Every structure is written in C-alpha cells, then in structure tokens.
Image (cartoon, rainbow, N blue to C red; front, side):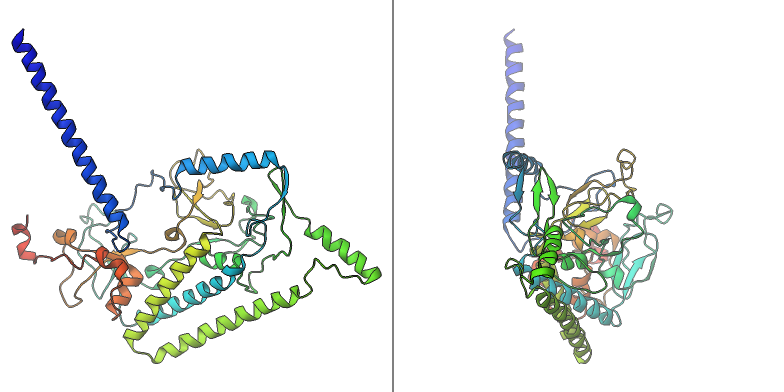
Amino acid sequence: MQRRIIWKTCNFTRFHCRLDQKACFESERTLTLIGDADDPLYADVPRPPRKMSERKPYPTPMKVLIQRAKEEKEARKAQPCRMIEEPPDNGLLVPELVEVAHQVYQARQSVLFGLSKLLQVVPVQRCRFCSEVHIGHAGHEIRTCTGPHSGSRSATHVWKKGGVQDVVSFPKCFHLYDRVGKPRVGHDERYRIPRIPAILELCIQAGLEIDEYPTKRRTRPVYCIEGRIVDFEMVNKMDEMDRNSYSGIVDPLVDPDLGTNMEDLRNSASLSHTNCVDKSSDKVGKSLTELSSTTMGSWFEMISRAKKIMEKYSVKTCGYCLEVQVGPKGHKVRMCKASKHQSRNGLHAWQEATIEDLVGLNYVWHVRDVNCPALDNNLKRYYGKAPAVVELCVQAGAPVPDEYRSMMRLDVASPERDEVDLVA
C-alpha cells in the first residue's frame, strides 16, 4: 500500500513538472511573438498560402464587430429617423482625402510606367502551371509548384517570360455610380456595370474625377430612417427649380459655386494626369538606379496613402476567394467558386479587406547575387522573400528598404551547396 501511494505521488510530480515546462515554453513563445510584433522594422517571411477551405482572418476581431453592431442597433432604436453627420457615410466627400486620392492615382501611374521600363532590363519569370514568379534571368530550383501534374515533376516549376501583371496585380471590382443610394450590384446587372481596378474605384469614391467613370456627388447629407438610406436631395432640387422658375429666388443652403468646384476638381484631375505623364516621360532619360528608386518610392507612397483612404472608405473582400468590392457593402453577384459556395448559392462571404486584398503584393524569393547559380531547394530555409516590386527595384539598383531587411534575411549567412550536409 505504501509503495502504491509513493508511485502515484511520483507520477503526479512528473505530470506537474511537465505542465510547468509546457506553460513556461508557451510563455516564452508568447513573449517572443510579442517582442517581434512590437518591432516596427521586423517582418518575417510570409507563411505558405492557406488552404482553400480556410477562411481569411478577420482584420477586426469578431467581438469588436458584434459590439459595434449592437451599438448601431441601439442607436437606431433610440433615434429611428436621423441625419447621418459623418462623411463618407452620409454621401459627402472627406475633404482632406480628396488630395490623397489624386496622389494615389499619380503614384499608381508612376509605378506602372517604372515597371514597364525596368522589365526591359531585369527580366521576370513566371511558372506555366502556377502563380509562382521569380525576378531574374533564370528561374529558381525551389520545388514549390502546386499546378497540374506537379507530382510527376517533383513540384519543379516550368518557367516562361512574365510581364507587369505578374509583378503587381490590381484586382477589379464593380464601379458604383452612387455608393450610398445604391451600394449593391445585383446578379442581373453584372454585365451592364463596368469593372475597374479596385484601387482606382477607391480613388474615384474618395474624390478623383474621371470622365469615363462618372459618379454622383452630393451637396447634402442623406438620412437614415429605420436602417434605410433616404435621399431628399432630388426632392429639394425639384422644389428649388419650381421656386426659381417663378420668383428667381436662390436657396442660400445651396452652394452657388458647386458647379465651379466640381469643374475645378475635373480640371485638377486632368492636370494631375497630364503632369503624371510628363513626369513619366522625363524619367526616360534618367539612369536605371534613379528610375528604380523613384518607382519604389511611388510604390510605398501608393500603399501608405491607400491605407489612409481605407480608414474612412470601406472595402470588402470575400473570405474564401480574391473578389474585392469598394463600398459600404459587397455585391450580390453569384460568382464565388471557392469553398462552401454551394451553401451560399454562389454568393461571396464578405468581410473587411486589407491592403493586400486591394493590391496584390506577390512575394518572391530574394536573390542576393544575380551572378550566382540559381537558388537551391535544399537551402530554401536560408533564403528570404520580398514583394515582387521591391525585389525588381532592388535588383535594378535601388537601396534595400528598412521595412523588408528582416524579410529578405540579409543577416543570414547561406552555406554553399556542398556544405548542406555539414550544417545542423
């Protein structure tokens, strides 16, 4: 009996020690992750692509979304009829973001022009069977192909020449004429409404004027009546036209310079586009290093300013596929073919989008020396990654940005091919 009690006590002590060791390991891991997250210049190599059956992570926690929905419901009950005051939810523009939208548009034009010129010097390779891209004269030897019949090739890529669309991608979305009055596109309207790059649609909704894609600009905020958006601007305009036709009275609430302001916006948009083309033509005479540095600077400007616009103007993305829609709500076009689309009748599972959903970064393997042999599959854990635009500009002569130094693993010494077996 005494021996049995001693044995149980020893097992309990061992089990308790294991729990303590596990808790200690988890705490150390948590501290390490928190320390890495606090460092603004630290960015690890991106993880492999998620499974198609897994949903994208929510940028905003679900508890915050539920609490926000409850607060909106209580506010709607307390005040069923109210005028929405904050733009852009009330249909008006955010004044400080109009100039930012023009800057994003100019930066995008500059990036596309710079990439078209850099690709004439630094070639781009893409796989014939999957979406893998490599910057350089010859493709790498890392076996990560997931395309058709990749098992017969031992996951080896088959390379061909790529283009600008392989370096950076801009997903398309439906253009909204009235983002507040009619924020959804029906399934029957999918062929009548044009699809444009989502970042361009974001700039248009933020204040950019393009004649090919007109949009409605309001002068008065809309009302919310029991959760429905009601616009009294058309009724007020008809009443004003009737009064002015008889008495010639001008409503003081209506801005008399509204047409002039809208015309100024159009003129500024056309001038900005002309200036962007002029600046792009001036870059032809620049050296390759200056062109690559300018292109990278325009890339970071486009990304940072687009994030600033997305803080006010909502962008939605599907949780299972790459579909994006700029606006307060997602469209109703039944075109989703991702996981569990049968249960949704082809509709998308909309959620909040991030900048990576708006602009395809397309991470590629970083090549330290272009003159060295191709990247070896056995040494892939020593290689770093970077967005294709950054890698292209770095190989063209631009300095390595501080934001991607850790991701490129410049501080990691890679062994030679004949030294792989000697490395632990």
